[in-house]
Length: 277
Image 1: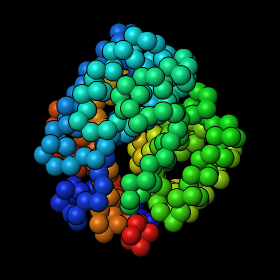
Image 2: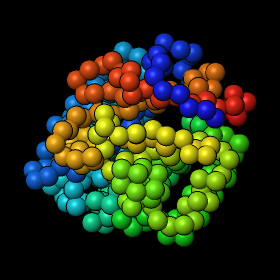
Image 3: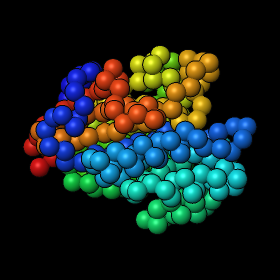
Image 4: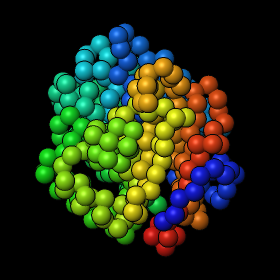
């Protein structure tokens, strides 16, 4: 698999086999208001209406400290999505209980009955892995992820986690998954991409998409607060991933309020076409 920056939007290339949007962290403070999430939901619905969005992914940290008021306030916003929403937990949700997360996630999407799950979408398999504690995994969690990735082979797997392994993003190299056995996960030959949030990075001032070995790492920016490299500027953005008939994966970034992707943030890579037949 090779990576490329820039270029045309996925809408201008081969036929789309699958397209999904990804929403990043929210956890607003001090007030439990979600204007960035609301704007992203409106835009995702507009893109779905004029083109195609098959589903929407969440990378965790929707509810600051896992409080009921945050869950209650974000719920009507997320229920406004016109496409199915598949969230995972983040470290903020772990400030409360797994049971509370599952309760609210089930209100957003009745299919969600546990913190981690797998969905086979045809060209790719999505493994949605909530952390076991904070943003990290214990050995049982690693074993579960490994089993799902191996079971999916030879299909490409997109792994959705709250945080990538520590060191992937040098902007905050100490923050992330520290279980050394996560190296076994990223060594799997059919793991194509790790999709994560957590760091609240400003897309305009960091390297948000990168290839390490054969795996592509895609950062999803926070919708309510930016922290890295500093907190002086916040621009709500979300990302849309398109898998094309020719095996290309196009990752587009949208600033809320605009239905055209930001060309300078486009990123793409390719599969062996035979792996998705």
